[in-house]
Length: 279
Image (cartoon, rainbow, N blue to C red; front, top):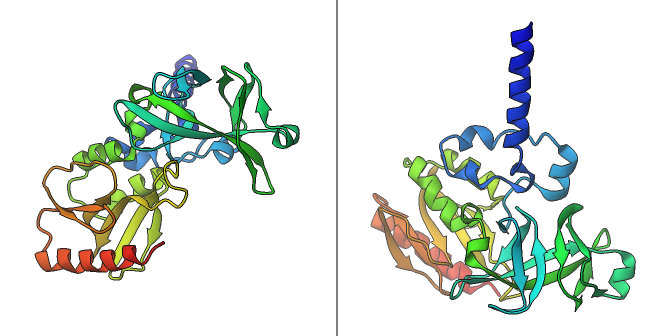
């Protein structure tokens, strides 16, 4: 009985420790073969999971991340560990970033926010403002928020939550490129599914919207016949063992080895026709 109690205590402590980063989605879940198991587990805290979400949508910051008015500019805010943000493509070691913070109805009508104000994202403590600032506000009828945008150093963004980096790591462990093997990755990054370009299935996310209020794709997994045949991307991506083809509107696709040339041409033609028709 004593041994059983000791074992139970050890298991409880381990569970508490391993949940540290699960609040905003653990990037480690998409980097190893263990992902297939961990990605299927339901969050223990249903209320927290509902408010923040386990999927990695956008990127996650490191503890003490500083948001500035520009590269090396004034400090606007400091964010807590694992807060979700949206990042535009990095330039010269800096990411343009954006995060929506919870606000009150009073702040919605008078959006001047004072230094020292505590920040929350979907009800979760997110950091603190470091200066007085006016922010654009919005509402969807159910909640109100203000958009805090600025710049942060590239080192402040957790690399495993950058989808391009995570995909490279994931494919190192899943070399058969089967569509079913990609499901944990698809769930973890909450990719949307589209079967418009038959016989192909696309799993995709969009660009951040920081640079363009009507963003196009950021990354697209292209599957055909239950097989991942290629990856479309708008940001730099280097996948070993692939050949690259340029597509319309500054996209590129990397086809995996062994994909027939006729299939490559067929998909590229259909995608180019589709993407040129999109506003």
